[in-house]
Length: 386
Ligand code: SF4
Ligand code: SF4
Image 1 (cartoon, rainbow, N blue to C red):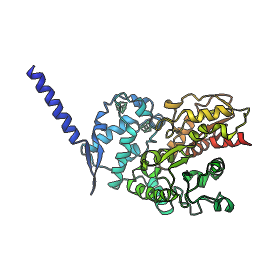
Image 2 (cartoon, protein in one colour):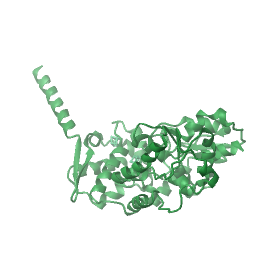
Image 3 (cartoon, protein in one colour):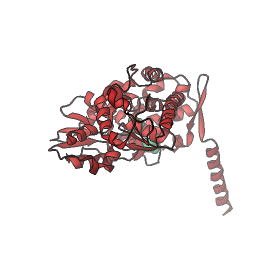
Image 4 (cartoon, rainbow, N blue to C red):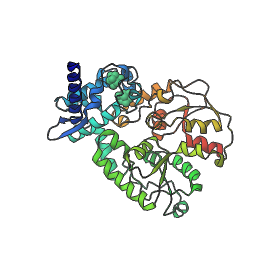
């Protein structure tokens, strides 16, 4: 009995020690930084994630699957010097999150990878393309380094009518502002009737910075947006980009209600007055709307109100990543495109369009080629409003 008691005490002491050392340090060139040691040590190296990691599926290196990434991070914690050798493994994760869903030990590898990336950045171990992305965001406020007006898709008349104060802000995002202004315009036209306004000098939401480890820079651009949102007096922010959604929801202060465009549309279906279209479409779940935030049904409800939905092979929690996220599109474009090509293999026969609700997914899936047109959900809604 006494032995059992002592054993129990020992375990509690060990657990306390683990709590105390919860944050481990990786020693860099002239920096040291922190990773959640408990998350790393929770990984029992079972390899369940190996079969689902889309990057591993494409490249086939052990170090490019979740288990390999966790092992490398563990080695860094245990004294391996950080160097560029770890980048192909740690910077090529799309943060898709399917490994976290499947992990029997309850590890959240995308969180661990993001923390490790932040630590590598502090040590000066950086993927060059991701560094260029960082520099573009800081200099121009957008992920493309564009210098033209972010609201150039808005007419002068529309701009002059923007309310200075509003409960609602439509947060456009870099992709919709500069690559798909037609999505921004269509979204704004739907939201306008609810009195939404736009930020006068919207900046990148900071998602690419957070995903790639540039946390200090992310704070800077988030601050620029926050000042404007508070000035407008908005309590609700609506966004049509999955990357912006997850960042606004999970990284900005909790004082705001963040709503994705599919959720907003699903809530207001009756007021929007949509007609039925003779179309059959498939829906691609963006990782940052679906797995990361569990928004699966809103888009499907909107689609079903308009036309027939025929599901893809892997959907909702099991949806395969388009390859665009986590800085992989810019850092490892070939891997990114190959992931998109693989995703297109999941498309069912006999559909007119693939619909999604993230401009980055639209872009990556379009770039992968294929015969089926990829559209954003706002385009489908606009067709049903004509
Ligand atoms: S499934 Fe979880 S515990 Fe198993 S190797 Fe992957 S991260 Fe580790
Ligand atoms: S988040 Fe996705 S890409 Fe990254 S390790 Fe997990 S399964 Fe692989």
